[in-house]
Image (cartoon, rainbow, N blue to C red; front, side, top):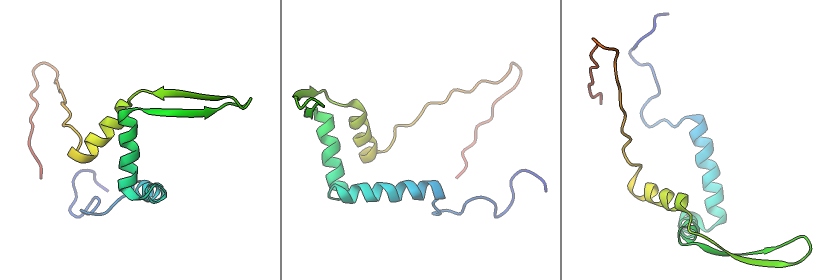
Length: 105
C-alpha cells in the first residue's frame, strides 16, 4: 500500500470519533445532574465570581473561607460562548529553503 492522499480516505464530515463521543456522553450525564447545560453554566459562573466554601473537618470543626475567582472557569465560559482564540504558529525552514503555505478547504 502506498502512502499519501487517497480518494475516499479519512473520517467523513460530521462523523464524531469514539473518544469525542464518550466525552460528549459523559458531559451530557453531568449536565443532566446539574439542571442541564444552563445549570452547568451557572455553576461555572459562580466559580468565575468566586465562592464561599464551608468545609467540615474530620474532628467536626467547620471552616468557612473564600475561594478566589477562577480564571480557568472564566476562560472556559469565554471559549464556550465565542470559540477558542486563534493560535499563532511560527514556522522556520533551514536556510535556503522556502515554506509554502496554502489554504485547504
